[in-house]
Image (tube, rainbow, N blue to C red; front, side, top):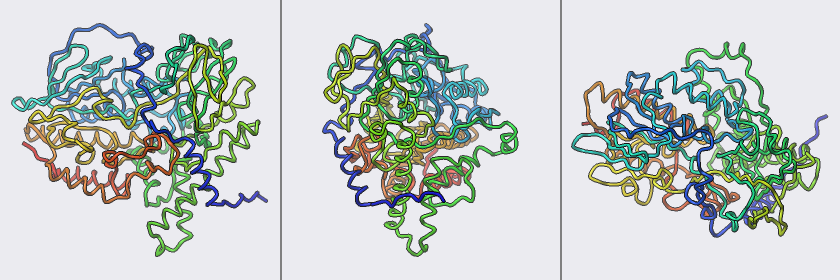
Length: 599
């Protein structure tokens, strides 16, 4: 007979969660980090591709897009499919890929299933090799999109936009860059992504360390040996390595580093929840059977449907992401629909989460040999308080004799010295420090992008937004003609599978521009009242539950400080992601483009 899971004392568990959260609260919140590019410019240099000299560009293109990741690739591909060839993508990296250009650390892979995560699979005819593809395959897929849709022709790499201004007289945008470029475009798009400005912990003495140090997004294979494709990191055989951080990046790079380092110290302030990944190769025969016309859209919508109130009959992806959703629905089915009040639904969600997190904590006990280490690896918060992680080797890595978890019980690393890292009052002498400290999330748009678009009448985007972000559908802004913002906020806000947001916005951009070009129109922007109406509608929802200050500190809740007033507008459709995708599909297909003013 199967063992029965122990009963959950909900009150005790809530008290434990609160206790663990309070240990980690800091007065400086997000200010505890420093920017890699500005504070440690030598560590921010592109280690993967040299910068090629070129002459400044002074031409005109129909569409210019800032950002060469999935956002730019999807928008560019859709426009090319619509017959528009004059498309330029600008990116600070040396090739397409966005975050996948930079994140080449060992073990990097997508944590949402490849079938729904990798965009334009159907259009390119690519079959992912694994349920969760590794970074080299994703990066190559980005290049594949670029090649297939001719996006390399006008692209500008190793280039950062420094200014973007609307010229009303000519109805074009004037774009300037750090490479001396000054060119024009009828339309512009911005898709710089939420995770591209690397950050370091603002630790005392960080600049004094005499060994080797780097951020995971600038992994130095010249030092470690190996390569992004997984060759052995033989350079670490005699090295003592410290990895600072235990978020999603560390969960992926710790197991690989543990295989090769003489000693590995993993410095942890807050453990990640690490559930089963169950990665496996994709069977070509199976893929041939399911990949008929429209297959990826079907899969994406099925995955998204599990995160709303819908109840799809089947679970195509069937992984840790959808497991929690199915648990919630199972709990709901035990309650009469007449009792599905908002309060009851939250209670059922909480019950499902408690059950799941108890399983994840028991998994740590089962897989980690040392009881003290296993206890330190237990996550005491709700699963969605931090980015959920899934891995089949991370917990087991701590069973290796040279691997040591340095659990700081919420305090974090104290300081860096010339010789190593100080935590819990002990100095750990190391040869190399790897900062798995992530990227900026809650900083201002103009700060992360490095420019502040100037729209009609000389108004800057920062001035238009003022106290908070303002858009129609998360895509267009009043006073900024022919400009598109490709991201998730104020649209679907679907973080479980971020690329779904980008593909959908690309569809909308292609529809709007296609309409304009066929009608011979010069400019389009949302009407002010339409923009305000959309914001008012967004505010009818329950807000951003992931940003709750009841959660342990992390980037979801501004390191425990909670949302500023302006951040409360970082919302999605009140009905959930699938409701937004349904709404905007009908909006596009109607051909009326309600809320937009054309001229």
